[in-house]
Length: 630
Image (cartoon, rainbow, N blue to C red):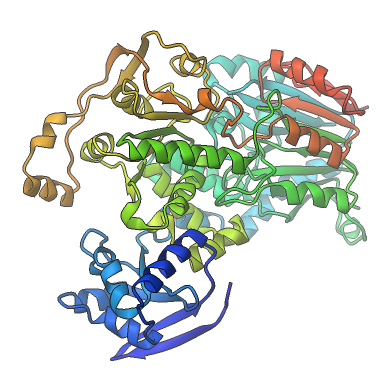
């Protein structure tokens, strides 16, 4: 990427222009072919910008909305960053006509995604460094006073949808995630430990199966510091659905932010802390490492008086937009010769071997393009905090010509998630920073649309489009509503990206075509007959067709199922069998503990991997204590 920046003055308008070389090969070739075929000359950059800023009828509007240009002279692409309204922006509407006059293709990308209010709130709450020191100081006294042996781990719950493990180091009690159903687990956790005796809570990421019981713990008297990345806190607040952030203030009394690769040292005297060498003089040291699962996800490396435990939480080795994978972190552990005594490892998909990510995307794009050409819809159930972001970018990049791209619809929570991600650029990934700064930003494109109202949903199901909805399994709203309308038509495509834990997802995944039960929200299709003017007026006011009450019916699934046609191409953000083996062999721990799967699958994985992995493999079985160090 080029880094040249200059300020251009055009008739009183001043703006910065950055230069680069776009990596979007398909768009570059489409644009250049357009210019070469029609022998269109390339105007000087200043002249091209002047032409855009003086488009007839929109002079004032354009001048006020345009904030920055990014120029790619060799590719003849000029990106205009605007805070305008894509529905009435002359640049977007006339982009190919403008290109004919100036010899540059103007790609408008809208800056409607400002800093997240959630992220700003979290930053304000965690700005008090002295409070952090005070919180850690209290447990530090206990850590320094007591022995850190023996060391054990006891799963409070370990299953595909509930995860919480208690790590005990002598008298110190550390909770690794708290994803359990509070109604079923109240007595279970109380049988394992007195909640008031928990000293630390480590939260790996913001998915419910890892944080669901956080409120329950503190309602029951837990006063332990909570260690998590700020991004995880952002997404936890977002996922809760609460608009009044003050409800979270009690939690911030205990929150200690963890930043990637920053060591959190707990305990030890001042004299001991001055000793040289990693971990020397500090009984407990905790480091958050990039996990590559969703934005903000972290692995935790715990150094317990020289005994090292790596808890992966949910992790994924490979990069995917907008986060860096954990492969670099895993390799760094090996290169730095950080001997890991115990590896507690996510084994969600370790019983499966899946195709490489690029192969999965290629197959998905080919199937989706075929469906769109046949005037069908592509329905994808995807996690709004993780895979949705990568999928939107994948489709956006696949259609370099905006005039030929189908609309891409996503739930509002995806856009809110993107605001949080943009607010924490520096902590996400270098590649993500470069992408949204130097290329058209898919999340600010008018081709990517929010499913805000019933009218939006009606538009999505009545015209060829790509719909990315939640949850990632076909278990409840809002994905069930789309399934009801699109699942019965054979020209549509359905893609399942998560574990299908119950009906109707399991039936679809198994290829059964008999009638299945669907709970859905009926859409007022009669609204389609409204006059266009009335519909536009309602849309401007943020009013849509009212959704009726939940209904239950049965339908036949006739739509094509991507996962049945390509059974090896499972989309997920957990390590498959090959990634798990790679991780264990690279880190080479003395002992590995599998968690996060059914007990039956964990037994199967253990049996299959024992001949491959020399070191002992254990299984995290609920309420069964495992000795790590005597």
